[in-house]
Length: 166
Figure 1: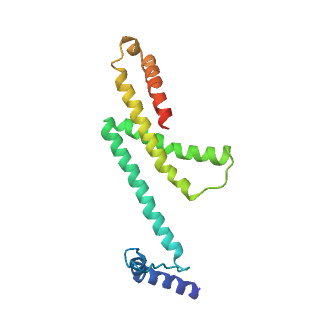
Figure 2: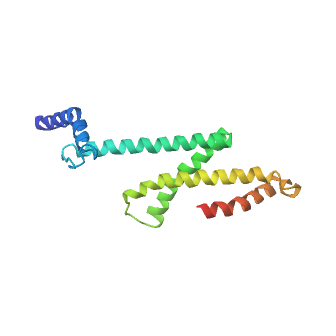
Figure 3: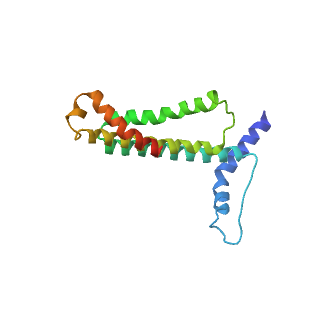
């Protein structure tokens, strides 16, 4: 029990006093002639976890920015929230299809980039659809005859553009 506690204390000591110094030494701009790297098995999990947390915060920040941009351009809280919900819920649906339907067990680290791709394509599709909806107001009485005819026109107009960009 005490050796486990000693190991934890050593890790904490290294994190508190040495990780920043090692990061500065391993910075490529530190010395143009010497590249420094460090590896310490006992703290590698903490270092990787720190990197993952920073990347996760960047992902959250990008989703917040996408939401703010949706809100700014759509002018509606409801449409912005529903649009972001559509984007976020498409990820577990795609994961279900990927792992259960297709039965693919391999998951590469680069697959996490799909978050950003899905967010970008989803936001683009929302803008295309909303723009087609606004354009439908100027397409004559036969389009504006009912909600069904208007949405029919919007889906036909936006569907092709969304299929091409997706």
